[in-house]
Image (cartoon, rainbow, N blue to C red; front, side):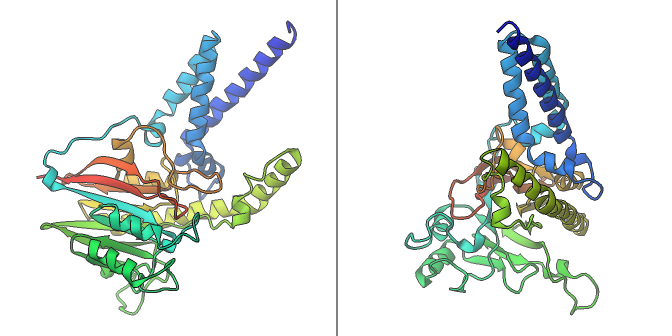
Length: 374
């Protein structure tokens, strides 16, 4: 033990230092344009887990009396705090000045209102959840037409009518700016299709718009609302299962080869495409204030695309009102926070944010409460 113990400590120190370096690299990975490098953007995806591992390593070194290694862990977290405060925030809900001026908005990639975990359950759990959730405005992604029995899981007239009764105002979907984006509202809502045009030619429309602009009339307050569904990674189920299939050296080697030659190129293309989506969206809506932008962002806090939103003046409701990291994607061990609620302007203020637990889709719904300020 006298010989082995120092060797083990040395190995743990080396591993910890590598962890600290990778954590810092992940914290600043979103500063690197994915047009030039993909690795930094991939590291950002793992930042919450790297930060937690760094914290635990620091506590372990502190308890063992190795103060220098513990201090290095603390310095690592401090050095990456500019990003970590959005990824693992330390904040709490805020009280409203006037409850009558508050409204609740929810975003949900509904996966066509399917049910990925209880396919044979009677009725439609997603529609029942939406009907009973109480949100004032619901931004849905991956939903085209509520009236199509071929799209909606266990469609029935009664289910749809109950949803319509709860949300008498609806806009978007089939025929709109982006065919899979829809808004349900307790307040009057209209889509702004003029924002979709890419030229003066009335017949020219971009075929795959990733966002749509709506306007909600909340008791006379006209709220511009962006509903977006940014480009995904387009991974197959087999590719998504690469991580869960690692059960030994052989499977780890195979998974690494699949990641390097099949998954990694797709990730790079998704990062670059998403950056273009976001650049276009913020440029088109740069003069709109106040505004809320929410939906399936398909990227995490700290990423390059997230940084583009922040540079455009958008604030993130989650880190302003929540404590600790969260995930909104819930399958294949890819527990990422990729559904976001942004806002801009002095007339609105985020009060709280919460993630719902319904698991009909591969995304969890995210809800925020806002207050309209005088």
